[in-house]
Image (tube, rainbow, N blue to C red; front, side, top):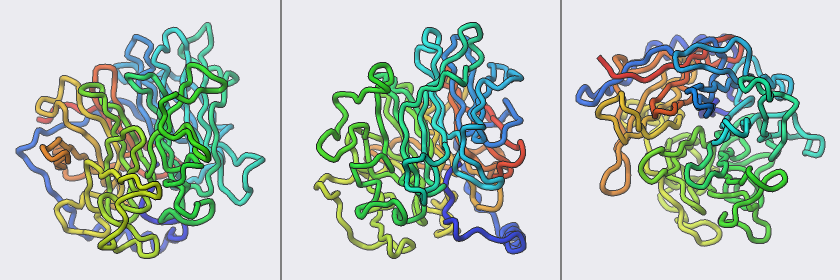
Length: 446
């Protein structure tokens, strides 16, 4: 789940939550639908999940897709949306104990081996119980593991086949990120990690310069590893940070909670990463090797002060501690909690998507389709968004019309099938106690 803009100390008792719900329902909904934009419709494709966080091809040559459910299961769905009854993989017994309500731990990422037909391998990012060697005041351990299917049943993963590739400890329950993706050109596995949690890039387990700026740890980064060789993996020789006191796995730095990432299957195969802001700004970045995306020196394109997170300072350093220039996001919009009523305040927590390269959504070719998780913490009001590149290198953001100003669900993630068609993953309750999670296919609007 993406991190909303509250900290654990801000949870509300049920009575006050009820009052908040009543107040929020009485507020006008911000509607900025532009009827001149191409519209879309949503068709229910698969349902019965708790909180689907990834929907990706199995690469089995049949168009089979895999749904990763946060609570600990992977499920197979065919092109018609029909699910296999038995889970593809269940690791509920290996995940740290989850909260029944909102939680940011669990299965958080999935990727199938690009040559799955021959290797039978898949990769999962999940939250394991805190390791024995970790600081026992910390919360849990993130784990990236490789699994293999049974030789006699390629539609069922052998849970005993787990090969743990990489682990790192997390001081808090939130800001885990977790997206996985194979580079379409280099074949390496890319991993998104959060900054360690809490808020403002500070607290237990945060270094003096902030984990996201600290090259000696893996938090708040994009990592890149070679899973095709090495024990348990190899570090690509051209990874940018391989000096003393630097983790060679690091590909890019300066991220807070990168919630979903994707490679463009067309164009230059650029890597898009959405990063959830603290209080004021949401952003999407184009990731380049060695890039520093600013957190917690900046939030979006704006200066950030951890001691005064709700007011952006007028001036701050435009370089990091190594003198490297910080990279601006290509997309930035205002957080609705801080800028209610302003036209470019779309929601409270960005959800990354994909550049559309399918054939069904005419007029949206080459458009980055993404979302905001919700306009309200307490209400399922996800907002579909679209962005197109401009001549100055930034991307123009607009609402993606689908008949209603908001979607009746929290938009947790997107999926892309082998034909480039897109899917929206939602959780109607923002809870981990029922099966309100759905997968919708994006189709042309009426």
